[in-house]
Image (cartoon, rainbow, N blue to C red; front, side, top):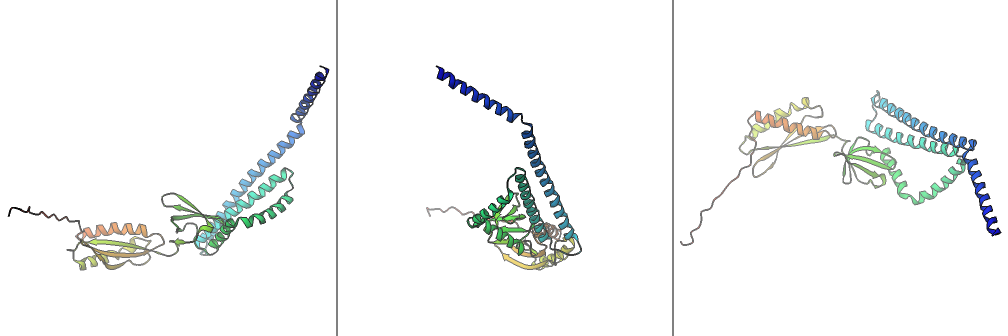
Length: 302
């Protein structure tokens, strides 16, 4: 019985000591002051980093906008690409410095951490070959100006406008709104539609009973008015002649050289205007014809 009382007294003393230690920790003003100071430093560092990143991005955008609009004719596509890339690099550097400052506020030896990270990065570099390949490929895409932000490209099965080019990934926005994200190392075949001028091709269906010479003369007259109407057209449009003969109609072709990626809008406009012009000049548009044949029943008794 005395042994049990002794053990109970020991447990009670331990609980009292633990309670006192807990009270000392909870009511330790210096400890909470240090914790509050560190938390405040972390919050201030992150807010300052966010503000600095926004300011630097705005400065980069303004600087490149001035270069594009300046007297020296810089390549606008390349300037936009470099602007996006520099914004990304700026954000990475500032946030990395913010993380180092946060670790320093927790009294962590940053120098040893950086040295260890260098050795770890070298080891990871051998294993992360795809990441290294993405970065190297992204560098050469930008350096060789294969395509830039704002270009209309086809990469594999994806087709759309380049939204962003980074050192690791490229983002392409499709015309229906979907966003394709490609690791740069996987980009092998690229079709860039925005470098050279485009060609608007318009095929016109003409009935067989129409006077082909009259149709050609009217279309030539019509083409002479297009360059003043459409500023996207670079050269006077050309009438190529009869493209094909189908069982029901003749097809004549018109082409016009336009600014890059403007051929879609120009083609639609030419089709509408040409239809109105041909109607005004009484040129018949072919209509489908249906021929019905009725056989006489055969009298088997004869």
